[in-house]
Amino acid sequence: MKRTLLLAGAVFGLLTACQDSDCSPTSDCIDPAKIRRDAICTADYNPVCGCDGKTYSNACAAESAGVKSYAQGGCATKPN
Image (cartoon, rainbow, N blue to C red; front, top):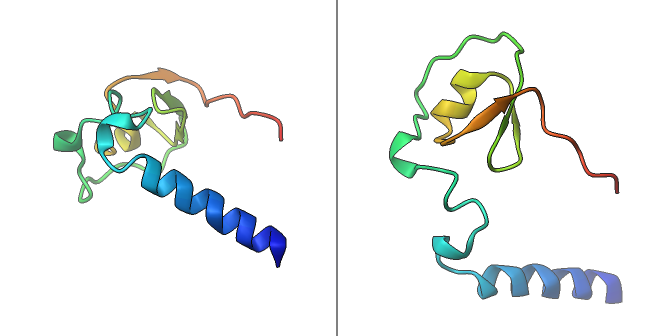
């Protein structure tokens, strides 16, 4: 129970501490005007690493998510 309350408090703190999009670390990486939820991309897996630190299945998927820049290959994952 104590652990659940701590986790809930931490999540609440994170949500309330950063309410505007400018304090997001990815605010300079994603262009909301370029987000295309209706984009049709191929299902080929040719991963790219977006400037937001996410791996996208291909360049089309990254571009339709509004990612401004990306590099070939998947993003390295951090060990837990």
